[in-house]
Length: 283
Image (cartoon, rainbow, N blue to C red):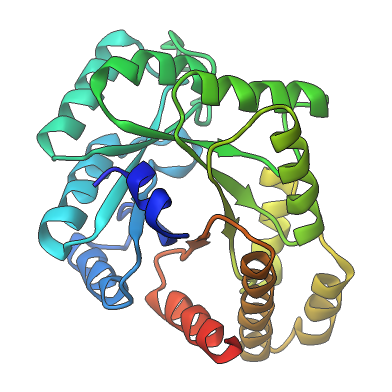
C-alpha cells in the first residue's frame, strides 16, 4: 500500500530500523522484526547504512521481507550522493523485484574517496525516480540541515522536494517540540502541503546525545540537560527518564495535530514497546 494512502486514512505510527551489520546477524534482525510486528506499526522504514558505508542490497531485501513475511507496509531508504546512473538503475530494479512501493529518497552521506556523484541533492533523485512509480517521501530538518547556514534556503530545498514528487516528509530527530512547531508554520507558509511526520528518538545515554549533537545539530532543551545531569551515572534511570521524555514529547505532538509519529527504534523492540505503552497510559 502506498504510504500516501495511509496518510489519507490516519496519522500513522511508524518505526525505523537499520539493516544488520557487525555482530547483528540476519537471524537476530528477523527476531527484531518479529517483535516489532507485534506492535502493529502502520509501516516500518529500513535505512541504508549510516555514513554511506553500503548495505543498499540488504535494504531492498529487508523492506520486501517486512511486507511479505510480516504483513506490514515498508519504506526503503534510497540515497544518491555516491551513485551514478547505472548504480541507481540497479537499486531501482532491486526495489521493484522485492515488491517495495515506498521509498524515502535521500541525499545520503558522502563516502570518502567516492567519485560517483551523478546526483547531488535529494530532489534530483526524486525527479529521477518519478517515472518509476514509487510513493516517495523525503527528509526534513526542524532545526535546519547541519550543512545549510541559511534557513530560507533550507525551506526552499524542502519545497523543491514537494515539487519533485515527494508525497510525505519525515523529520530528523529533535528534542524541543517548539522547533518543530516553528518549522511546520514556516513550511506551510511557503506552500508545503504534504504530511510531515515528526521523528522522535528516545534518550538512552549521554554518548548517544553527544553523537546526535555533532552529527545532526539537534539542540538540547533544559529538560534534557537536567535528565543527563541527574542520571549520568545511572544507566537504568537514564533510560527510563529518556523513555518518559519521548512519551511526553509524542503526546504533545499528537495533541497539537502532528501527522503521526516516526520512532527511531535503534533496532531495540523494547524501546518501541515501552514508548507505545507509555502513550497508552497517557490517553
